Length: 276
Image (cartoon, rainbow, N blue to C red; front, side, top):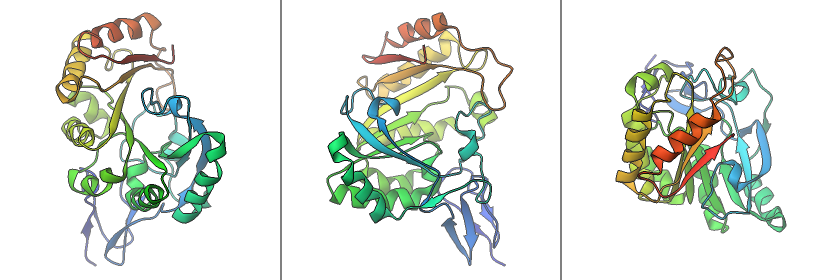
């Protein structure tokens, strides 16, 4: 049986018939790579836009937020691991067609809903569903928001990004060593950030984990990179709390968050402390 390569992310999983990729969401079915989580929703809620977090995109509004299952990274500190690390048969889902999602979003306009946020798990492992929903949302004057780790290939993103209005990209750290632990690729994420900034409003979040990605030098390099893309990109520097497989770590000290934020402000206009 012929194998097929998945070209959504840099893992490029080479899948034989019936095999699922490491993201748990993409599978070789009859010689085609299919998103098996298409329309399978694990979470649906009306959230404040600031929760994404987006601080400089329609502040004070709400957005219909949904997630599915699967992720192409393996972060041991994931706060949504019950869905991001789940396989198709390990979690309850409800089927929501793109047109049904649009109708739900439109019905919530009287509750200050501005559109749809693709979030909670890694939405881009279900690329086709995000693309189809985003196109319909745009036709109905709804905003599209993407919350992603940004570890995805450029070509498919060029087809999607024209329909996206705002993105929060989770920049995990700024060393290749840290990204290797997560099964990701720093250079791919940097390229994603540069590409996204050409199309829509971008904000970035970095979770600061003690002894992992918390040095002043790393924050200086990270903020200098963001500055080189656009000094107006907001950066959210968030405090870590023990979670998933990283229960033995202590929470990040509040002082550390504020110290690193001040370093980021040497370059960036908009820096926000999170979880403090």
